[in-house]
Amino acid sequence: MPWWPYGFERSPGTPGVVTVIQGAGETTRTATVDVADARTVEQVVDVLPGPEERLWRIETSLYSVIWPEEFAIESAPSGDSTPFYLWGPDECLIYPQGPVARDRIPPLVELAGPGQTMLSQRHDPDLESVDIAYRHEGENWRQSHHLVPFGAGQALVITAQAPAAHAGLIWRAAQAVARSVTARQPPR
Image (cartoon, rainbow, N blue to C red):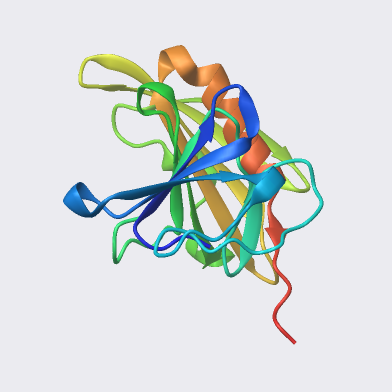
């Protein structure tokens, strides 16, 4: 449980170690958390027992998703409607939106705006996705939207964008995040 604003980064070559960054500017604090001996670090991160899974998950109050290995977690700015951002290499970005009433989400094929090209649309019972190409600051970029059913009449939208050179990475990571959505059980 991080203290806001926060960031989490994996330690390369050490899968059970995470660096937690709390604060910004001169008030930034960091802590290294090792799952083998995880402890709370005051005013940085509260460490609580977690599931026995052998993979990292991001927990929100409504759902959890996997944490893709190539990405760092960053808190959203105050007032932002997304609970977190996943930042990868060269400005690759994945972020969830919602849950949103399904009838408020336009068909995904309509999400390509001016100057954008719809490359593909995929649909299966658990997930609908679109892949869009566009140019940003003179470079080729890709964007995808992944629609995940979430309860009665609602959905989460997992959006991803990246320079075209990272199209494969961002698509795989966003699909993994979208397919891993697990609703949290309400407290009893």
